Length: 113
Image 1: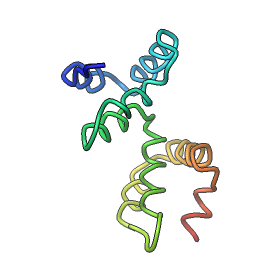
Image 2: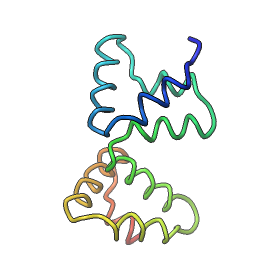
Image 3: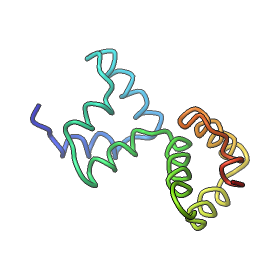
Image 4: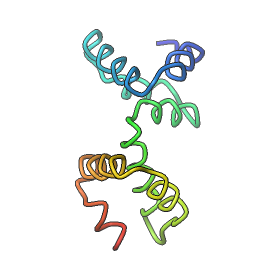
């Protein structure tokens, strides 16, 4: 495909989360492919991680960070504190819903577990 990384940076970093969601929808409608899947195959390393993170809704990104912090042996409590103690109740509800949708697990149960 010949990836234009400068264009990706300009498009993704210069938009709000809602605008990036619209870009994802228009991309799929135009090309019949998920933008995330195309970027996964075209990008690598930290640039890939950053581009994909920018395509997440804030609640999805937070849910992924929480899941990563609790995965495996031990829990990174600093991530849990940073994510959960800096959000409003409305944002925490959205994170809990995103966590359930993404991982088919209950966030509260995983935090307690």
